[in-house]
Image (cartoon, rainbow, N blue to C red; front, side):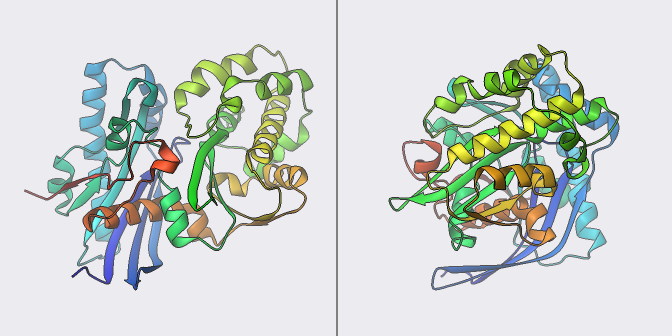
Length: 356
């Protein structure tokens, strides 16, 4: 018999490099109906040296990546242990951790999330469920997005679930299948240009709003091949580094105009990506705080009802859902959908480590 209650810590580090999200969650399940409560939650910012390392790690050699993975696993273990100690969390069933994506090349059968080495379980003295993407890529999938099964189980009342993080992704039901895919880069690009102004990010999109849209740049961005591809499809930081930034850098225009134009591009691609232009759109992720971006999405989707949830769900939804993926793995239940990733089969992904 499976348990009806699970006490979990979900851990997520996203491509926008905001930090490590941790959420202490209690799940209950009865008659296949899942409910959750987020208790304590926190985002731990990266120290500057780590921020710089993670920004350039896409270019690291194999040896450098091995060392980075080892060091990052130590860092993550320290962060998780401090969280457990700070909130005196007891009787955990597991810590479910995504790690941090450095390389994502499903077309080459490869994805790397650091921080998922077996020793993490021993370092924090807890059962750890992690490394959720690798198996899917081995099964011919994109290894992403993985959040949609959580959307289906926990947020089924909304027509569309969208995350605005380093990239935007969406999930929805179509012909009794969950469909999901990455739409475009978001904060990976917006934060890059905010950094050039000495800011961590463009607060509420205030700077973007003061800029002017460059129509030529907008047209060039909208014409990129990725947007013509059918799902399943996913994006990694390589796309930003090799395609998006070089394209924008061809334009000698003020940073405010780059931010404004890219925000318009993101909003337009979101509107184009949704098969129906009405219903309810549930938005989470750091981009939900970008008022100018939300305003532009609403402009392009005038009949859509946009719902932005409480701060806890908005900021910790991915940590919440990776916690759920871990519980499903512990139960041996499907946690990755082939309709979403393009893998050969639905499967139960992730690796379970026990402390030694």
